[in-house]
Image (cartoon, rainbow, N blue to C red):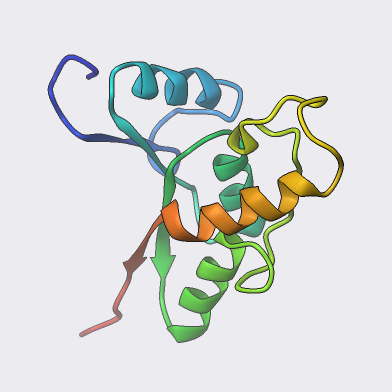
Length: 130
């Protein structure tokens, strides 16, 4: 897939057999090939979305969005306070920061602030039309 010339790759955890154990290597493979790694999580779940982003995904594709409330929750799960409820940890791969590189607290501000501007979130709206 990396030699295909595509700009991005969707790593499908909803219908595919990808586990969180394998996700970091797949994300790195995308990055080494110049592709943007987007993870399609299994469902609209705070843990799934946060974990995919913490492991270094540039964005998430969130399936099974059925109404306005589920769309709002999906966005909140993917964003840091004050725009969302995603937890911050400066030791995850997405923070791009070694443990001893900065003093406590400074990473949280930079990491969270930059993420709001750069992350990609795609919501898959499911309509129940007759």
